[in-house]
Length: 248
Figure 1 (cartoon, rainbow, N blue to C red):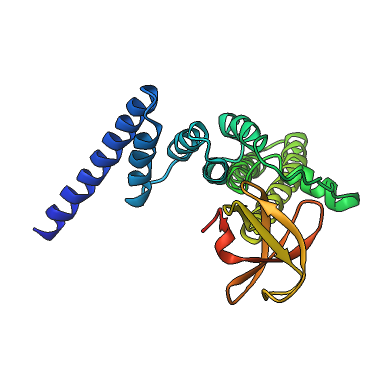
Figure 2 (cartoon, helix red, strand yellow; figure 1 turned 30 degrees about the horizontal axis):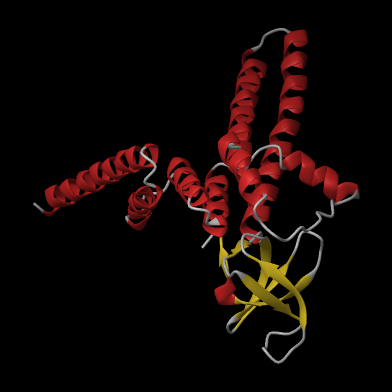
């Protein structure tokens, strides 16, 4: 009986999420962006998330001239799918509304080459590619094991070696990207303006001021303060309430 109740509740939740999504879409089409946003938020509140929900919610906030929530939700969509073209495109429009212009200092040397290569795909895509190469390696092994002629055996053996290299490369890329994903803590400034200080206390000097919608990266937390770093390498401490982490 309990199992049947659980299944019923599960189906009800799915139906609710689908209904709320469709209702949100209809409201958005009719220009009722605030009501549409509430529908999408209700889906997220029920622990159902998707690229589409975050993307549509970001669009609602963009239409409502709320820059920080718009960028935040586009970023949430990109966490689920870093290569989503719609989110990548719309976030550029939203970022044009931000005040702060922060330069991006590119990496150089081997670190740049490695990051450029592994960044081609998210870690889960690299994992799928590695599985594909592993399956191909198995096929070459079977061919090598059952081959009768020496020439064909050598062909399969060389093929096994080459595919094995690809397996190791893709597995390494998957681990590297997963580590990068886990360690990177992007956040969006939600305060209209916020002082970034030299130390985690109000009495310390203000280094610079950030404004709504700016993207930062959190390095550590101390009490009600978070140490952040910008894309130009500048660091400082900001009130935790002034920003919202994307991966929370």
